[in-house]
Image 1 (spheres, helix red, strand yellow):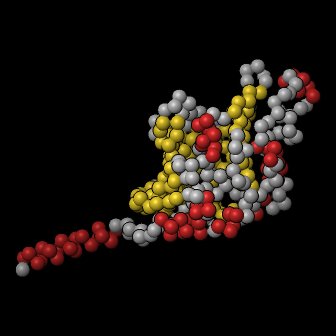
Image 2 (cartoon, one colour):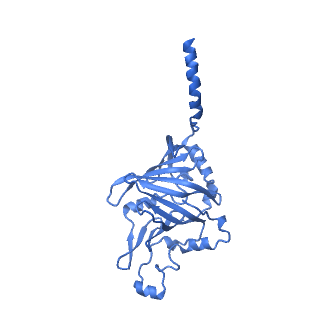
Image 3 (cartoon, helix red, strand yellow):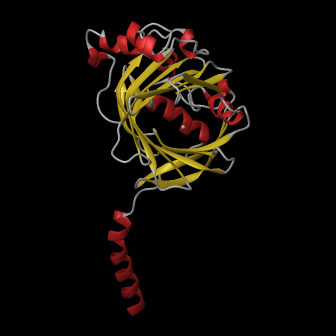
Length: 298
């Protein structure tokens, strides 16, 4: 009788702990998780309607404390990208046309410094997530996905997926077990001297833009450093007019900076400078709230 009483007492004492324990997420296959992720982000049809996208915001870098570095990121299907960032009143631009990439940076002599992408940079650009990421329409892209388990990310349960790209590159993606949105990813990367490491990316502050979910805060950091970079998106434009020349090798034969300044010429030979079409589209929108998100966000 005493043993029965002790057993009942132990069971009663365990009830509060059991009641407060987080519930395990439902057992789903990798295909089911991807399907729910696509639906949570707005659906495949909505994303297929987006041919171009532009982000305008700033980067808070752990390597430059207290600085907010303005940037514009422009993307065009199938895999064109253009990224412009301003640092200390100087502009640096990276362009990728789907096959080749270039880096345009200011030089000490005042002339633009144009360099092609390195082999490692080309590999990264080729495997970049693009407009909608690897999970959206993954089968058509030739992306394979496998479920590796359930882990805790930011205090919530998340499905850990192993994602293999057509190039053979692999990465991990964590899908929140309640919202089914991406909350974290990681990939292997190499620095300028060839050392490898893991880059971890966190996706936060999701907002709805024209029916699709987009994170307005993206934070990344490497395993070898405590410093992180935070990309804060202030405005987003869907389907702005982006011409192919914006992603091609730029013309760099320009007059001397003093002559250009006296003539009132822009920094690049293209009209209105880098990123102008997207910014003009944002500024000219009659009802900005219809296509833009305002707030906060390799």
